[in-house]
Image (cartoon, rainbow over the protein chains, first blue to last red):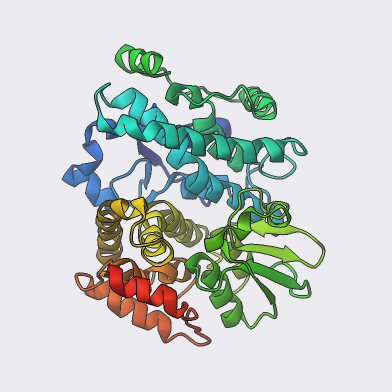
Length: 219
Length: 219
C-alpha cells in the first residue's frame, strides 16, 4: 500500500466473499483497519449514505481517513498488495495476476457467488431459484478452468501465494453453499487447503442459522 | 509494456468490444502486432487449438513470440500500458483505473455487450431475446454510474485519457446496437467524443450487413 500511516475503514458484509477477500489480505498484511458492517443482502447498499460512497451500490468499499474512496474488491486487493509479497513486481506476473482476477469477476463470481446468494438469501419459493441449474453449470466450467491451471501450478499469482489466490479463494471455498460440488476438482480442493495453511489466514465468519438452514435445504 | 522488442499476436474478433480495446491501445501506442481473426460468435473459441491458448474459451488473447500467453482484455491493457502515458505510475490513480476496469467487466459489459450480442448474432426467434429488457435496464444503471462520475471528471483514468477510458469506451460506443439509448447521458456522449478525438484513435470495424440489419430490426 502506498502509505501505511493512512487509516482505513472497510465497509462490507462479513459473509460476502468479495468483502472477505479484503479482510483476509488486511489480516495477512497485519494492517490495522476498521470494519463497518453493511447488510447488502437486505438493501443497505442502496441507502443514500452508502450510494454517496459508491454509486454502483456494491460492497466492499474502502474509505481512507483523508476521505478518499475505493470500491471494487479486486482493485482494493491490488492497491493494498502493492510493494508487498502478495503482488509480484514483475510486469508479466502482475499481468497474470490480473488475468485471474478478471477471470474471477467475469467467469466465476457471477455464477458461484450468485448461486450461493440465491440459496441462502432468497426464499424457497423465489423465482430466482430457476436460475440455479445454469449458474451451477457455469460454476463447473469456471472450476474446470481452475483445475486445469492447478494441474501445473501451485498458485494463481505466479510463483507465490498472492492476491489472485485470495480473489479466487473467497467464493470457491464456500461454493458448496450454492450447491456447487468441488468433488470433481481435486487440484482445486488441494489448493484451497494450501490457502488455508498460509500465515495469518482467517476464515469467513459463519452465516446466521437461518441462512445456514437455507443452504442445507438447497443443496 | 515490459519489452518492446517482443513481437505480439492478438487473437480476436474485430467487431468485439473486448478485442477492439486491445487494437485501440496498440494503435495508440504505435506498437507493431499481428492480428488473427477468431469468429467467437460462431464457436471458434471452442476449437481445440484455441482452447490450448485459453481454456476459458474467450477472446482476446495475446501471444508473445516467446510463446507466452495472456487472456482477459483488461489484463492485456494493463500490461501493454505499463510505463506509458496510458497508465499512471501513482498507486492511488492505478487503483482507480482498476476500479473502473473491474466495474466495466462486472457491471457494464455483461449487460451492454450481451444485449448487443443477442441483437446482432441471434435470430429474431431466439429465446435469448427475452433477456433484453433486463439487460437494457442493467445497462442503464451502469451508464448512470458513468454519467455521475463524468459530471465532475473528464476521464476515468485519473487526470488523463488512459486504459480505463479505453475499456469503458469499447462497448459504450456501440451500446445503441443492443437497443441501449445514450440519450439520457449527455456527459457520457461528450466523453465518447473526447475519446474519439484522441491521437491515433481507430474506430471498431463495421459489422457485416447481415448483423447490421439485425441491429436495425432490434432497436
